[in-house]
Length: 485
Image (cartoon, one colour):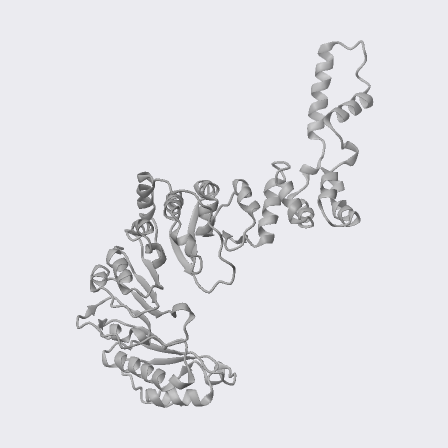
């Protein structure tokens, strides 16, 4: 084993020898060699074997020798801390090779290898395994020897579910994963459209244990790595047992985050529908990047989370949200309606969507966050117990559109005041879209004292500023009709 380590590392032998120096107290090099060589040395030392010794005596001595050899110090008796020091000096190829050497070294070499790649990270009481973007094939081959405990978070590209389905499913079955995040990428259309995607996704979700309380199926945008080629193979029939197992899984899940890509094909939509029903889900987020409003409405119309407390919607278009969704979830405590930009567009989305005349009553709503494009819909809210309101104008502000942006902000602010929804604290976040002089936000303070309190219910009006010029700060204060002390 000593020679194996010396030749497996690219470090100079002298460096390795110095690293091995602390081991000499635990590993007697004089006892090195095969079991047969050790036995012969024992025979010589004790001079207890002669041609005249009876067979029974010989067996007793052999048994004694075997026990002594088994108890003699070796490299495998070395503390983990010292072995880890040696393994840290080995290149990746040596770590992978040593993972198959013996049971004693395997978990240590795999741990060093995965942490070096950034695939495995640990914090007190939790561990996270991330298989995202570019992952060496050796990682998936070693998963059978990876054993994680405590709170395990698992993040994985759906592409890898297609390529290494059996390995990932086997890992999931024997690992108590508490939080799962599966990822599409916006530029990898082949993964979404692959015939096997729905089958692989359903199979993997059904393998999760009852300890899983958070499920996310997300779409990551604006990635720089090249699209990966999906292996061609025919789809297989879904097992009805998988669907039943997912329903059981959803009975314990508390948090769900979904992308509308999960509903892009009919086969995927069947999997997505299984995730829209959960008796204990209290936190739900939906990200809609499609410009088709009917898809988002169709998703929300199927959601049934009786204990839902927090709902976040991020969309590239202004949605006419189905009123029925809020009738089923009247106990909402926090609501966030946020805007996304489609295809990296720098254009501000329209705010002119006609709002419905139907009011939406949310008696328990206490926290409201929205971007100005959702103002027509927010204007229909009735929430008497609102406490905190946060308004976010459009993210991309062009110099020639400043007037329109300020007007949109003023409209949101006035609407909140007129409807008595300002709450105890109102925050207005103002992004800096121009090339301006950098100014520390602490100079002007995030919390501005308001003279004469233009909002009767509000005791605190705060502005979140990002590198705004002084003239911009003055402009927004004038528009809101505030006097700054």
